[in-house]
Image (tube, rainbow, N blue to C red; front, side):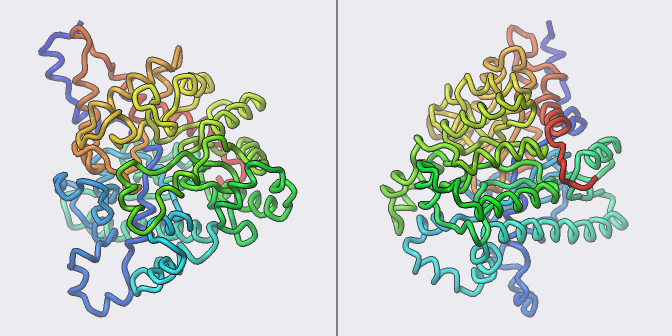
Length: 482
């Protein structure tokens, strides 16, 4: 047993910084794409200080030792960046799977109303630049543009960090886009002296859709119920070619569903209840509910995409997929005898919060048996059965539940997928990545009859050990360069 003195002296801060931390699902790619510098503002420098011109690049110039408070991050903040690179350093990040997520046309119409409203907003001066890169092109080309945006911000940050490291006592870790596990292992071997590794991931298989596949969600919703899609060889060839290109670029996983039906999979209803109030202003909340059908699963092309992802050595993320789509993915993995490659990167537990978005106990046990991971999302709406602004209690409760139902592999199935900067509302105690050590503090503080509920070894697995095992064994990247 551990005495009270031993318990109180457990140095969670040092432990967290020394632990190898892997965030399986975050979104630095989002602010890098939508809040990168606006060229014409450089002609009038005072504008860069105005609060309504948020800048991810400026946020990356923050001192890692100067952590902001939670106050300005409350709610679904889009102008305060939770994954700015100095915050990743302060929070002890070693590997972050950074997701490119392109806005679906149906999402824009749900928020803005009809297509004419969307077109009007897209022509506004500041929005036009975003629209030309991430809305007007095909989903696939928009995704490539987002990946280019984060790579540009990484390069700019490293130039700034290297200059600061020559003149400042505060040392900034560099950041690197990593495209293979071999390089990831080299960075880990540097023992904390290497860069923070960002790995490309894609949220939503609509990103596989090029000009031929198009953007009509209703089209793919209908095709879920027919074999018509299977007969369209041109779409299939385009999708498969785009998949292989993502693989060659070092994309570790694709979250196959997102907000609306796509060429691969159907999603659960994506919005928190409170978001319906915003959709009700210009959109059609009743139509949004009808649009999402839990009876839908994988399309015929989707079945082929999942099989090809397994063959290519990519990870398949079942987050956002309907229960039927998830069950189909599990069946394909069983048929192909696939281990490590099926993951859920940012979810909660159905037994705690009975939303179809969350995984049921049998699914957690199946993923554990197949040596995958379940990443716990840092969003109270999904991890607890009622709305609260504080949520670290239910994050630890969700972790414990996943561990308990995972069977003999329960300790090996838990991971963290923060979803920070993904337009989510995290707990106020974990408002940005720099506060991530508080999660370790909470896990270390929990005890059962004066014994640690979470040993040091188990906490290391939760923070990154389990995710590392999946990346090592599941992300083979058979079409990626070494």
